[in-house]
Image (cartoon, rainbow over all chains, first blue to last red; front, side, top):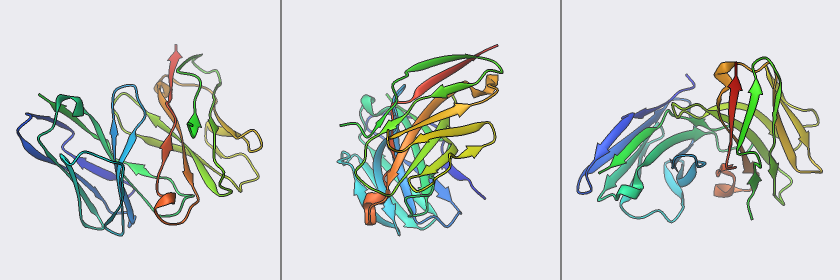
Length: 113
Length: 118
């Protein structure tokens, strides 16, 4: 199983809503990532978890709150988002070694209205 | 300074022809990995091919191959016998071989949009 599964695939939310994005992998990878990608731009790293602990937070606003409940699951909790937060949110996982590829999910297309 | 540079925003190639997508990188580390990903309009990032800094031979995977020139810090992707399904964004990326969290980060270039013409 070399899949990273993200749900939902599409999400429309209001600026006062609270929602969560979910990501799951069963490859035994100990590093998991959230990326944000705007149209026609490369993915931008938001958070990295290693061994279920937050390792990197790229100065992301607190309205994005990551959570790693166990080694297979990664959540991104969303609250009070702005329209400019509309983007494709990609989850990825990888082994911890620098010479291994990261596997990406299909992404969640988020629209904030 | 950008760590990964892709200078071709868009490329066109005739079906069944070969195409080369350029990528240069910047790192002071001796250990690093270079990756190419394909992103169709559906959004999924698909891993294509990998080249390690210590690899002496150019990587190949089916119709994909890399022209790795370490001294010039470049790793160009060659797609042979292009197919219509190859139309997508292509990203070059790097992981640096540092200890701890420094090795986790995958840094992407700006990408090249490839269009295959029938």
